[in-house]
Amino acid sequence: MSLERVDSASNARVCQAGRMRREAVAAAGAVLALTLAACASEPPAAPQPAPSTSTSATVAAPTPAAPPPSPAVTWRVGARPLPRRPDGFGVVEPTPPELVNRALPTKDLLPPPSGGTYAATIGEVPADVLARSTWQPACPVKAGDLRYLTMSFWGFDGRPHTGEMIVNAAGATGITQVFGQLFAARFPLEEMRVTSPAELTAPPTGDGNSTSAFVCRPARGQANWSAHAYGLAVDVNPFCNPYSQGDLVLPELASAYLDRSRRRPGMVLAGDATVRAFAAIGWSWGGAWHSPADRMHFTATGH
Ligand SMILES: [Zn+2]
Figure 1 (cartoon, rainbow, N blue to C red):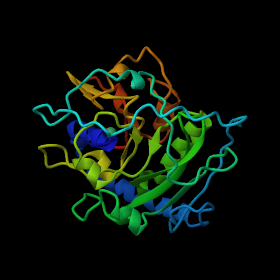
Figure 2 (cartoon, helix red, strand yellow):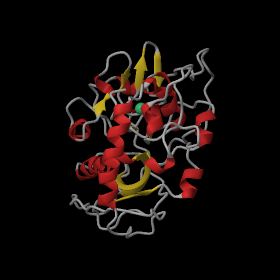
Figure 3 (cartoon, rainbow, N blue to C red):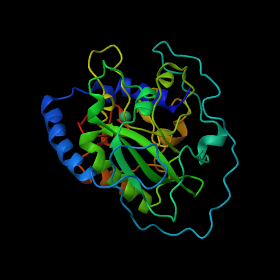
Figure 4 (cartoon, rainbow, N blue to C red):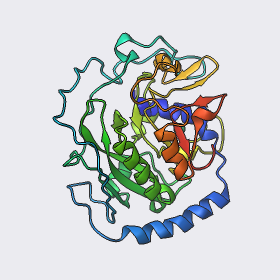
């Protein structure tokens, strides 16, 4: 199983309690028009998965002397299903020693950026990407109102990588700005990729750490959708920034990261550069909530 399952699990319990307001959707449409106007300029430079429209931006970043050797792979993500609790989540178990100071290398799914500079593209969601995403006609957002982003990020391996993300068109430009700031700050991310349908139904393994936005899934036992189902929420390094409520921790193996006084790379902390970057585009942070505390979660809807 994977993080997406973790992500969606947390969505189900909390994030996805999202009561999408019609005014927010209307506002999204207005911003979309602006976004489209801003996006019509130039095609993507790199051999990206061909967005039909794009923007690109560059942000100077500290030049690494030489990429450090990748850390040894000491953990295989998604390999060990957890027993389930009665509520369907995995049993919360102590964090394995290999993940207490988690710094797993990133597998390149897209060509990494060249020259240590931030690059981002915004385009319509290509048909093949849509087909491997969780989008379906019953989702609360039209495929045409979603955008496919590619964005540079720094891995825990000290190397630059290119990630992909599906977001609501209303937030597309802002999100590329946020991740530009994270890149400039060298804030590490482990993975950034589109959530697949299989991940929603896979058994929980409690070790996911993928940064993602759009996941089309209703709140568990409820008729309403999560902000993720509109592409209006982003989860950042879920394992480093777990969700917790009562005795539930998601991802289920991430308890070592409940101690926020032990600062480790990839953690989001109150008032830090990540929180400020999202706040600058009007997105709030679930880490400021108390029950649950959803430390991975940034949202445009307040839910
Ligand atoms: Zn979330």
